[in-house]
Amino acid sequence: MSPMPHAPIVLSCGEPAGIGPEIAAKARQALGAEIPFFWLGDPRHLPQGTDITEIADPSEALMVSGSSLPVLPHTFPDPASPGAPSPGNAAQVIDVIARAVKLIEAGQAGSLCTAPIHKKALKDGAGFAFPGHTEYLAHLSGDAPVVMMLASEALRVVPATIHIPLSEVPDALTAEGLEQCLRITHAGLRRDFGIETPRIAVCGLNPHAGEGGAMGHEDDALIAPVIRKLQGEGLTITGPHSADTMFHTAARSRYDAAVAMYHDQALIPIKTLDFDGGVNVTLGLPFIRTSPDHGTAFDIAGRGIANPASLIAALRLAWQMQTARATP
Image 1 (cartoon, rainbow, N blue to C red):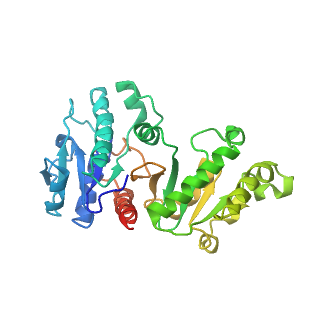
Image 2: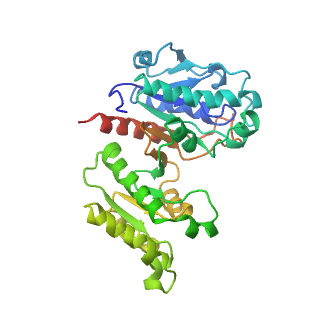
Image 3: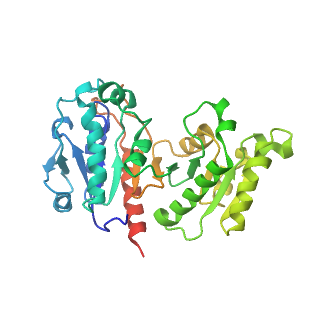
């Protein structure tokens, strides 16, 4: 699915009781007309006093003043109560995501940026059967295999396993799964980041990448053979490397993305390097999807203090990826 080069980004509203509406308004204030996007949701859920322009078609977003937030209305049953999600709104939160994908498929939007959802609220209110955004978007795309990338100016990193206990990681790691993760990462760096020959560094699972079997055998028995196979096909992949030496400045200059073996091995370095500017990117979908790397933050919703930096970074990255995909 090739995005329309100049079609605006669709920003889904996410959970109305969270900080999504607030940071959407703040992002528009900060970006102005720099990044063309529109907000898909119920205008009643935006902070009081937000300057909005309701549109009937996504193309109209390109003509809205940079000081006003273009809004494609999607009616919800209930108003938003900051910090307290309404079960009556859950189905519409889900419908907004599906509608956004259809807009992209129709060529009316060029990419998707998703505001945070609250999985428990969706499960309780609408029987949402997916662990999160990523799995639902993959489902809407025919169950395409996907991987999660966390990206910032300082680092791009992909966890090969995600939300599972550390004790389950060794069994969850398979040669087939790691190979698929590396192939999707390689393809995404080429297609979405415009890197013709991506360099990927792979973390070891164990301390010191197993130290020749002294601290575990997975690195030599499972990870290394996958790397050698892909190297034999011409991919620029190195490892397994000791994870404790992969994320300092000089090491990061030697690769375009790192693939880690488990959640914290990937997320600790990027959140240390750029806590506010990290972006969640889903690679492998037929369309571009980015998201701020944080949750609904119910504890501060409605107080006007939410930081829009990650959403702003996510919108900028979506536009950069959209441009990269549209470039022959």
